[in-house]
Image 1 (cartoon, rainbow, N blue to C red):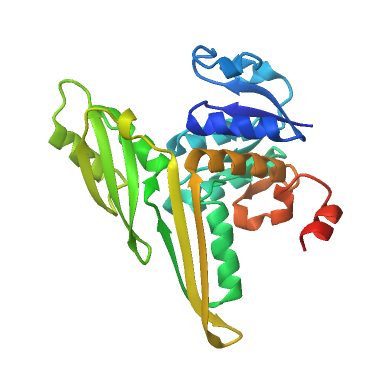
Image 2 (spheres, one colour; image 1 turned 30 degrees about the vertical axis):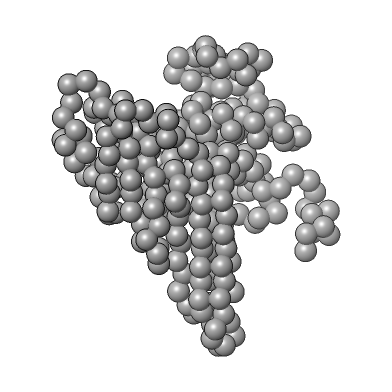
Length: 297
């Protein structure tokens, strides 16, 4: 049994726990939260909830369900203890730098870090890689939404003056997106200043962003999202090849599932830091490789 701990317990953490409970090869040994209690979460009554992973004894892998901007500090801390980590870090421009930072720490301590193991970046990255192999010369577009972006929502919630937020991704076509951010405002804050702070955040600065004031985010809240991956190109120097991949999902549910699959794969790799495109897909699945080859190939 793989002994896993969940670090953080927000939307993704809840679904990661559900995925662990469904996996026959995992044991959840505990949840790490700053407040170290299970108040308000009856499903945690049968688990140890602590503030320090050292209280849990042996842990093979820490599943980091913290905001992306907290991933590096947590991964460094656990890798230094020889505990492998997986995360869903979603700041695309920072992935290569994070990989370069974590890789030597993982190697030095005999651990594995799998980064950006959500659905995008993550499983969509694997699909994009496969599509390029199928049509080496061509053009790809990733069209998100319409749907809730968890990373952008977390970023909006962190802006001073925001009581609650929901960031929706709106596809404009050919990989271009706009953002609609719905916010509740804390008392005493100016909406225009808060809206400008959101638009200036690195999560939003490159997209057309509209911020809207609402009375209740909860009334319009959603976990739904979708993606359309398209590639047009050539296979064997033959043009006219068209590929179209679509999915409609519950965002945190899929992220939690991929994190658990990546945690399994982490323990099958040599020490170091990996993205999902560097890991054999078969390593994400439970069971013996020989049986999986016979079943899936």
